[in-house]
Image 1 (cartoon, rainbow over the protein chains, first blue to last red):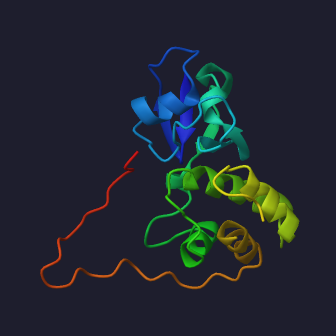
Image 2: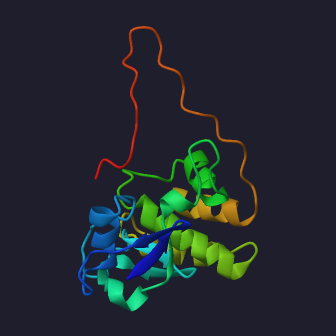
Length: 136
Length: 38
């Protein structure tokens, strides 16, 4: 199996049913996707699979053979953050930081899908998926 | 809510330049952040 992760192609050794999350973290040392609830609820493992946000903890790696995966590491560097990363930095939106990679990946996908300004309700719904705080 | 504010700002392109981490002052440890703590 092959994966292209953040622009780099990898030949994988993991078993086909291994969750993508563990392939990323344990085989490829890509550690921004976090192992939170590991049942698809919390979203901290969210990555982009061919541009769509998906829970990597519930995705068997064989089902995404040949796909392009984007994680937080692929969005920007400390010296050149993406707009979403920079906005989280400016607004102190990281909180403890554990689930922030998943939130930023979901926000990035939302903004790419919208292609323009989003409404406050849309942003609140996204934030509500984190379970980190009530969407007030 | 700060997450909401950040998403709204990013969607409107209202994001300024992010300064780099401050340099450690004299006597402070030089912390190198690499990878993820989790």
